[in-house]
Image 1 (spheres, helix red, strand yellow):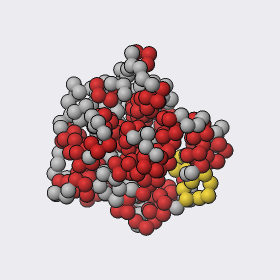
Image 2 (cartoon, one colour):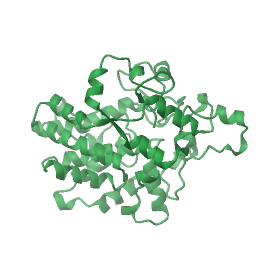
Image 3 (cartoon, helix red, strand yellow):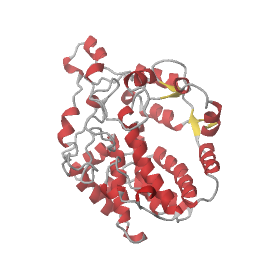
Image 4 (cartoon, rainbow, N blue to C red):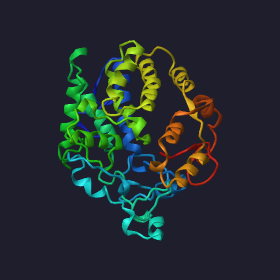
Length: 367
């Protein structure tokens, strides 16, 4: 594949026009992997704006690579925690474990709570941007880890050379290496401030001696939709084994994501995405037909946006919602397919389709 995943940041990708040549199938794979990284870098400055009005006020539109701002009005970062002894946060550790209600009055707590009801310990103007340490064009930790998997898979010569325990050892080495600003491509370690809660919990377990193969948290015990980072991390496996039959390809991707994200939701996402990428890579049918087929296999959640918001605010944050109820919010679906919904709302304003703070949007932008 193109050398980007081994050498360069998103601002200097080699493609066909700059010298890298491959078969049409290889070009499709390269396009998917580089596109994943480029899309991540483009979206990085505007991650996790739940209120579309605040997003538009802060950023406007994104039509090129942007550097993240220092602050983010809807950031929950200071309310996040990591309790493991393994140093995976490095110089970013100071931004975690800040929130404690003990020393605040009720008024202070309200002022330092976010729109989800979470107490985050900071007022809106002082909340740290999730990616404030990254530079324009750099990838988030999630895609940096996916790129690590790409390099690992690229170094293997045959099917039996892929060893989950070997990949996990490389992941641990990567995460424990102190980030270096000179490492612009984030090849030795990422330089992101935000780290997926599932990865944090993985290393919390590893810190107390749990074997790496058993450190992945389970969706049954965790409410966070951050588990879907596991779908992204599985994309390189789909690319590497694209010649396998589709069911085997899905199984390989599930094996890989389950190393860090043991989640029914992630497995379902992979089960939809892997056949789609498989068909696109091999050119089995027209791309539009493949995309619609994948979208028709997915259903909208039964819970609506306003219902989700009411649940979060009433419980003062999603972490306080009883586990059976939170499971249902993520795992009970309507009969309407994603394809039907999207085709019916193509011309609607985004805020009328997916919103949080105001309106009656069918979908929520909540975690």
